Amino acid sequence: MDKILVQGGHRLVGTVQVSGAKNAALPILASALLCDGPNTFTNVPILRDIQSTLQLLSHLGARCDMQGHTVQVDAGGLNTHEAPYDLVRKMRASILVLGPLVARLKKARVSLPGGCAIGARPINLHLRGLELLGAQIDLSHGYVEASCERLRGAEIYFDMVTVTGTENIMMAAVLAEGRTVLRNAACEPEVTALADVLNKMGARIQGAGTPEIVIQGVEQLHPISAAIISDRIEAGTLMTAAALTQGDVIVQGAEPENLEAVIHKLRLAGTQVDVNGNQIRVQGQRPIHSVDVKTLPYPGFPTDMQAQFMVLMTVARGSCLISETIFENRFIHVSELQRMGADIAVTGNSALIKGVARLSGAPVMASDLRASACLILAGLVADNTTEVNRVYHLDRGYEALEVKFQQLGAAIRRAKA
Ligand code: EPZ
Image (tube, rainbow, N blue to C red; front, side):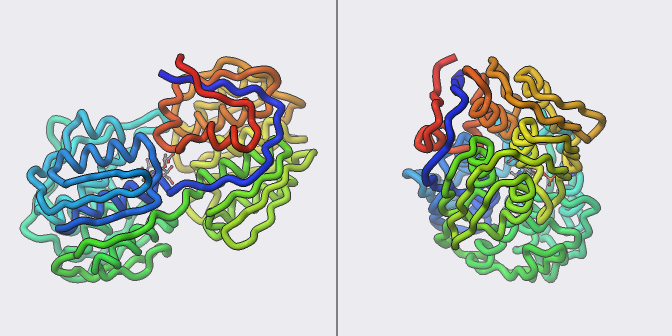
């Protein structure tokens, strides 16, 4: 297992390119199951989660090839409808093959993904949506078994906003007979990116990016080429690092319109943020002001940025409240930040943060993807050295983050644990 060593106190200065979005690439790769023939996707980030997805698609019989940031997936030769536990357990987003398999093969047997560090992560809304589309759903021996004659369009209301739930049902509905309406659908940019790819394949989807999505089923889809949108969470992470270190960083290739909540909160914290096309210049200022944050479904402040923004607040002047409304256990990073000298008190789904003058470097343990990034950010501003262990979490969702920080002037390196 690798670890990352960070020597604090270096300003980040320079220009950094944002990679493709993990949370757009995962559903888009799964959507290749819906049609015969070679789909080509560019700007795909080089991540463990992408490798896991390609491994699963290959297991199902698709031909997958990744050369650099370009991926080809040809699902013409699907030869099984089963996604086994030993593959699904590596990445719960594997559940995204469920909708496409039912739509394409009329049956699927997918291991239940189970929970993870940040929460139970149930998929009841995914299953309810498939039932409303006419699938027979059985749960047995830790697997979901779904089957149907042919999916039929339906009106589906999600009683909680679910990103992959919206994506799974949208992918199932594109080949259903008739019209499907999704209500209280997720509005995340990654949902819109998936809809754009499906429409390019010949689907008929309207309203993606709004709470009501209308899908007119079609007989079949055809393979396409498409580019993956940039990763707004990686961009937000890089911007927060610039704010933390009083840096001056240009984040290149981001989509500012997808980062409004993050830009708004950084500006309230006193950071200078200038947007120029797909370049976002971030100049960190002192003092950092304390700012309350509540995580919400898009376009609210993203839960995937909560841990990173918390680091900024630990060295702000004043006190603030961060409320996590999406996941029930997404404060695991707090105890590690406290070990670095942060003054944080957690009550239920809220954390009260009182700014301190400095954090102190320490050996810390990453628990999940975004907590890993948060601990690296803390190391950038802590005195002495911070050693972040279990960085395999980081490699799931950030492409060479430490290299990007090195190029911006951070004293950071990867080492064998
Ligand atoms: C997606 O997860 C993202 N992952 C997560 O990013 C992100 O944090 C999350 O959306 C929220 O924005 C991918 O896109 C691959 P949800 P997802 O379904 O779809 C509850 C990262 O760090 N719920 O929107 O699994 C659920 O428990 C990851 O990149 C049900 O109760 O999240 C949660 O409380 C972490 N039943 C809330 O809804 C369901 O059937 C939102 O979850 C589905 C969800």
